[in-house]
Image (cartoon, rainbow, N blue to C red; front, top):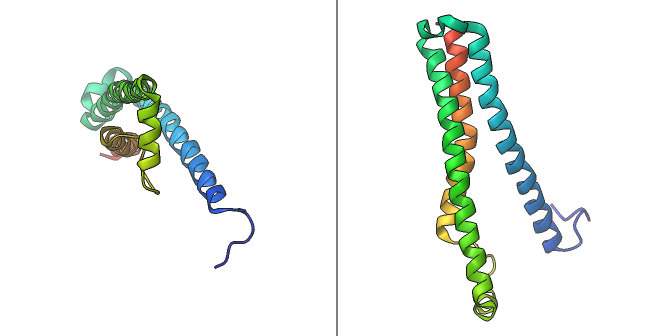
Length: 143
């Protein structure tokens, strides 16, 4: 299928893709935190003081809280990795420019392998943990 003139250049298409990725990953982060709070609130609202009688509800709350703590820790890790990379770039701008010139397109530059690995798995965690916690809560209603 030919380009339908939405993008004037391949770079325009890449920019649109990058923008969409940023929007969706941001929304995933916001929604996964909101879902975790909703799971905790829903479990407490439904079971209140009898929550200890429902193992799956406890698992749901535990997973949601674990996700929130883990998310904070991973976010701190990513911030530190990015800060280190930023300081590396500022320390020697000529070296930074040279690295850019020698990077092949497409390239993961300026990101390092640790940054890529942590962020890839963090995106998956943001989706998986609230889903599993939510499934535990739903199962607690029927089991």
